[in-house]
Length: 202
Image (cartoon, rainbow, N blue to C red; front, side, top):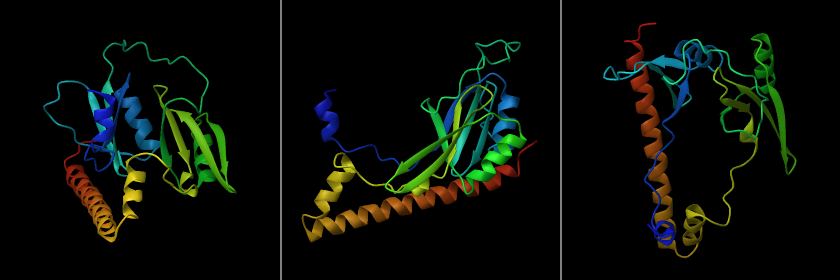
């Protein structure tokens, strides 16, 4: 497919992030980390799966752990490597970055601090590894406003919004529907989580 064809077409009809899937050497160790450190809840996964793994859920997103069969069960010691804030990572918003640092220190988890400053706004970041070396960030990133740039589908929508009253109404309706759809999906996910927790065997 030509690049021009992709750019001219509408984006995929997405609603929200559903889950992040991670390969792990020890499902048990990873479950304990995501439960005890990050506050995720273990939920039921499809019984038809014929491979080892676990599903967890919280904060509107799932973590799907899959046992990495290519690594021997005796190879459980991860080679230590520097915590690099520029590495691939999952980021979580927090209510109190100071408390996050205190809890990590109490649990003996090594972390690296970071700071972002923009227009007088200061964001504090904490980076650390999960048992398999995947990078986790915890921050107060909502201090930085989300502002569209001059390119992309959202900017095109904004420009069309100013062209006519009819287009403006269409834009508002589209955004309203998108927000309502996301709200419905979030409620359904939480309802399903509540029901699934009744069938969980810890």
